[in-house]
Length: 335
Image (tube, rainbow, N blue to C red):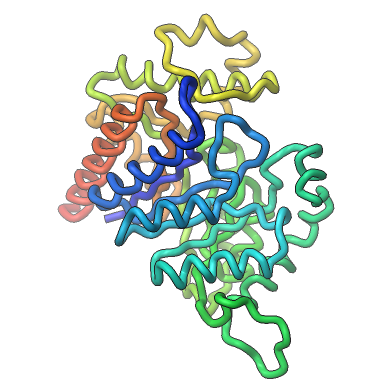
């Protein structure tokens, strides 16, 4: 059975607070653990009023403390924003407190704008050092070497699983060359999905962490009792992406009855292109669509995003998606 996981941005809903968002994230993680999801990832974004996971390692610790078996990690840490030593120490601490449950996904994009980068005391040029930073981080989390003078405490020797995240062929090639698992951000940047997977597999070289390619793909999946209700829930994400196109981000808006009243034709085209890897409807409708998507990508794992405004509806959606996973697993077993 192919593993299903969850990508959560700790969305702050209109009328809510970052505290609400983080409480909902931990509640969702507990729900996901009971439903058999494989991992629960939080993402680093800065200076965005609608996302509460900027202090990603802190949020991961909060979620890990509230769960007991599900893997918890970063999807991801934007490594150009940090020194590898600080990340090794942060995630070494998480792994020490929650052994065998921590993942460290690494991204090259800054996850913010130029002004915020300056506030972080970083620059866009930092991204040029991403491959070297990944290798430095891997060394800091590996066994201590003779003569080594810099150690992550805790961190050294913990061998925390590293992932490369990406939305282009650059990260795919790097993940392959380093022998690391690769996660593609097809939930918001699907254009290069198949090219990136091809490049990753073609360039893969076995490593101490991984002996063969392992690719995880992301998708927006919104499930409900009726297609109409699922489409209505999806309008929260559609509104958010329309605002992104306009450059006017905000809190996660409640769903609306008619999305066509909100966006212009140009905004619709651009937002819909970004949301192309989205599956919306009843479980019976979604099951064959997800199966086809997984078969076409050859993915080893699916990570699901769901920007649903109403928390009970979001829990119910993930419950339905877990049922789809069971259904697909049973069908593959018979085949």
